[in-house]
Each structure stands twice: as structure tokens, then as C-alpha cells.
Amino acid sequence: MKWSAEPRLMRQPVHLLAFGFGAGLMPVAPGTFGTLIAIPIVAFVMQFGWQVHVAFAIVASVTGVWICGESARRLGVHDHGGIVWDEIAGFAITMLAAPSMDWYWWLAGFALFRFFDIVKPWPIREADHRLRGGLGIMLDDVIAGLFAAALLFALTTVVRIQNPGEAFFEHSDGTAPSHTRAAHS
Image (cartoon, rainbow, N blue to C red; front, side):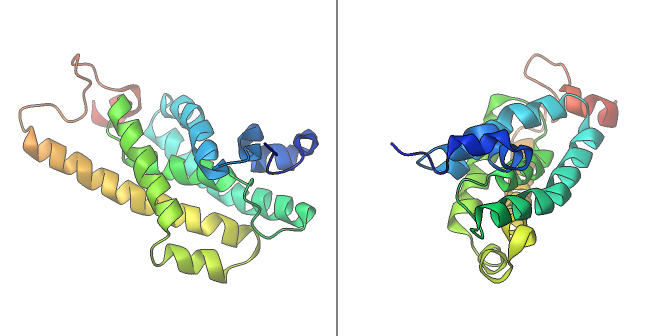
């Protein structure tokens, strides 16, 4: 199999970030691999609380405009498939709606984000097709992340309604997840 780009590109910091620390080099489904690499990154950030998670999502999205745009400019390709920093930022946005760090919320967030990023319903498709440069690369994934977060939040609300006796912001062992303790204690 052939890489999506030359692995030696990872020697340049902008490409290392844009290609998700090498995840975007995968010859098949680099966006999915970019989202997979986002899981440990977002999990690390979530342990510092919701406010840090929000700050990370904003910083990843804003700096991603430059990172993705500069990487694309250097490659001479508008939205190279291997550029996956936008998936990292979009998944970070999605997981803002997760009520805990339990595996099923990760799975739901991953599936919802990938769905919106692949299918690209309106207005995601418009952002993807009409905007150029770093903003165009980033905005469709930011919107996909917002859509996925909205559905993840709706799903958490349904779960809460279906299980009214269960504490919403607790793990099954009764402990509060680390990213909700400060906000809900």
C-alpha cells in the first residue's frame, strides 16, 4: 500500500500537526484514522475539566485554520486527504457533549462525528465546497463536530429521561467523571 503522502513530510512541524502526528498518512480512510488519533488527545484534555476541554477545542479550531492552510499551501493541494487536524478539532468539539468518559459515549461521539464528516449534509457540504484555504478545510469539520455534539447531547438527554433514578453525571460505580466534578459538585 502507498501512503497518502511522503512520510518524510512529518519532519516539518506544520505537516506533523496537520497530518495528525502521522495518522493522515494512512492510505485508506485517513480521516477515520485522524479521528482515532484524536481519542487519546481528547481523553488527555478531558481529565483537566470541561473548561480546559472548551479552551482546547477553540484553540485547536482557530490554530487549525493556519495549520491546515499552511500545510495545504506547502503541498500545493487545497484539502489533501491526509490533512486530519480538522478531524482532531471536530472530534474535540463533539466530545464536549459527552456526560462522562465511559466507553459508550466515546463510541457514540466517534460514530456521530464520522457520520457527519463523511455524509456532509447541508450546511457542512456548502462549507466544504465554497470556502478555500485553512478556513475551508477546518469549517466543515467544526460544523460536523457541532452537529455531532448536538445529537450526542440529545442522546444523553434521552438516556437521562429513560433512567430518571440514575445520576446523569456519574459512572456506574457512583463516582463523578473527572471532567464534570468541578462543574457539578
